[in-house]
Length: 269
Image 1 (cartoon, rainbow, N blue to C red):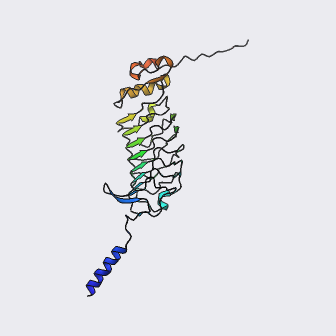
Image 2 (cartoon, rainbow, N blue to C red; image 1 turned 120 degrees about the horizontal axis):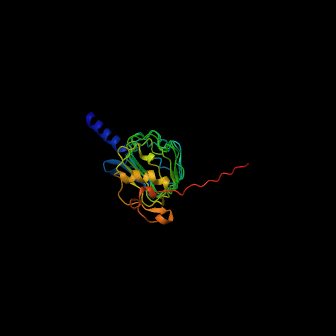
Image 3 (cartoon, helix red, strand yellow; image 1 turned 90 degrees about the vertical axis):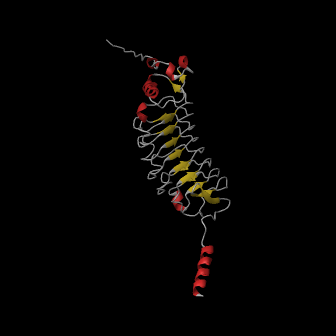
């Protein structure tokens, strides 16, 4: 009798225990690709959902209206076990540098198609297992010195269509394991080969769709790039006018030239 009572009590407790699949509507929580996943796309959220199970591994909140991620944004809502965060097209424009702090098993972040114009250099500090970072379609305009912290396992960095006008020669200095870098369809007219010298594992460097100025300032990068094994499509000159629409490989290196500098010296008796 006592055994039967205990079994009934255990069953009742099991039924009463909260289930991680119980989500705040209209989210759907389920197993997906072997991960505890919260699907909250286009759900009308203006902040991160606060009542998801702390063991959630994947969070997709794309298509909501979340314009800001403050300090410890995910930690404050109990989501410290996230491995993947998808936050596309939420209108995000302001990210505190510690927004992702203590997400130590985070491996993928997609913040594409937002309004991020300024990314602080220490953003993602401590997310050392991060492997994929997508920032496509944000108006970043420039990448500064040591733009990214030490991310020893980052393999893929996506920066397509970010209106980038300049990339510091040391922007990627801490990303030694990078294999794929996408800088397509930006506003770059020049790059330094120095920016890529610490990449021992780089296999893909996408640069097409930029308005390259084929002059002496680009010559060093042009020579390095054409000699590398990274070229998949031809890059096209947009300036100067006499080289417009000509592929890099069709222009000899010595024709990547700058007009001579003329200076006048006046001597007074």
